[in-house]
Image 1: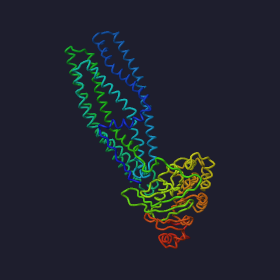
Image 2: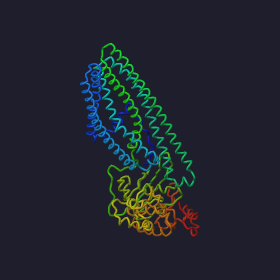
Image 3: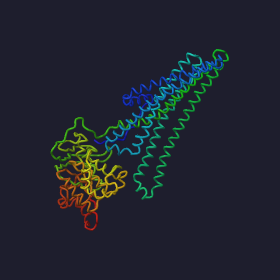
Image 4: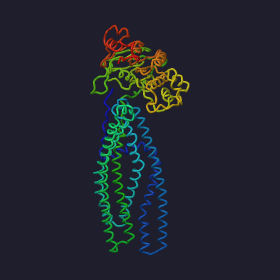
Amino acid sequence: MSKDVAPTRLRVPPIQVPLFVFRRLWPRLRPHRWMLAAATLFLVLSGGIGLAFPVVVRHLMDAAFVELDRSLLNRVALLLLGLFAVQALFNFLQVYLLGATGERIVAGIRKDLFTHLLSLSPDFFTERTTGELTSRLTSDVVRLQGVLSYQISELLRQLLYLVGAIVLLTLMHRQLTFTTLAVAPAVVFFGMFFGRRLRRSSTEVQDRIAEANTVAEESIVQIRTVQSFVREPVEANRYAEGINASLRAALRRALTRGVFFGMITLVTFGGIAVVLWQGGRLVLAGEITGGQLVSFLLYAVMVAAAITSLASLWGGYQEAQGSAERVFELLDQQPTVADPPQPRSLSAGRRWGLAFRNVWFRYAPNLPWALKEIDLVIPPGQVVALVGPSGAGKSTLAGLVSRFWDPTRGVIALDDIDLRELCLADLRSAVGIVPQEPMLFGTTIEENIAFGRQGASREEIEAVTHAAHAAEFVERLPDGYESLVGERGVKLSVGQRQRIAIARVLLKDPEVLILDEATSSLDTESERLVEQAFEELMQGRTTLIIAHRLSTVQRADRVLVLERGRVVETGTHSQLLRQEGLYARLHAGQFRDERAPAREPSLG
């Protein structure tokens, strides 16, 4: 049953945010756990050297100012250089391993997300814009990449520095340690207070960018329409308004981030100033040496830097959370049309008929019925033409055959099997569609035709190209079958694109054909030749033709006349004319002058 697929934005309570992202990412992290473990080991070793740094500095300072020992000073300095060299090696290994792992995981997310999008039903895409979906595939996934490649390692590093420095500070001087840690509650408060706002503002920025991308994509795809109506300034203003909206959201985010980091800096370094003052008094009192004070200050700075970095990471994490919600929302979206748990198989070695049994359909519960009480049996090999006014339900009826949607009520059967009991791949492999306005992929002509059947040979491709009367223009092109057709086939005329689409379906060689007036954009001679190919192709195949032209209707075994979603008349062309009903009125109004025009008028 078709249903409204407008998504519900995921709402994750702030306390559950880390668990939410970790739970969703852990299955993707698990295959790389050994690389992550190695990266963590190198991070710990590097952090350990970092924690040893203030101790070495204390000995260096005391050697210079207390013991006045030049030899000790030189040895300590060399030790410090050696530690830095080893730390650099550990940092390289940790950053490379974690970065490479993050890249692999993000690449997997992108592939899985795109594959999942391709599995969703057409009704999902009527609720989403292309700009929004591409934004989630690109910018939102990039934010997740930042979490995996940088933020996780920094989180572990700063936690190590924080815990290690606090332990060492406590061992050195407990009173100064309490003074250093007095700023922690304030930092935690600011992190929680501003973190939620950063997440909301980041999500808003991404949404506004997606809306602006949609405007840009629509204008570029329809550039001829934009230019022919001299709408360039209007479209530029629409895009500018979208960018300005994203800019305003980004400025609000920048303001929140600026206040957040400003407050964190004030609190943390204010605390260091207090520690410096208190430590200076202890030096004057002779309770600690100058080297010990410098060492303590370095640890205090390390604690302050760790707290500040953790607050920063929390803010960045909250921003990435908005992107994570958008990505996982798509991955959680389920298709409204899916394979059954135990699909049945179509009978081999014989042709299949179609049956519509009391079929009702509407696109959403709040919309009117698009089809009502459709009872129809199409024997194997019969050609049925669908005729009627615009909006009568012709394309909807044809779309149900490929299970782009499922009937709201009733059953559609192929080979006496409910379509919902068949594997989608088997069903759609058995159905070939030639739309009235076909879209091609931005690759070569050969690749577009070969889309009809994977692994087709060049000889088979050339054969169907000749049968569709497309070879006459394909072979005149400089690169022939290797010619690029441009995005959506813009380098070809409508008629040429249509013939390529016909060749593609000829190559597929389906059992059931759906033709949305596939010859409507051809000239008279090309139409005659293509119709000959269709005559051969339709032999013995069940065919539904959405008919707009008289020649198509006359060729059909049976004509169905639809009005407001119902079949109001059925019969042959001549029978329907004698009934003097809707079909006769459409015919009289649109074909009375048929001998005069070069092109036939439309029946629907």
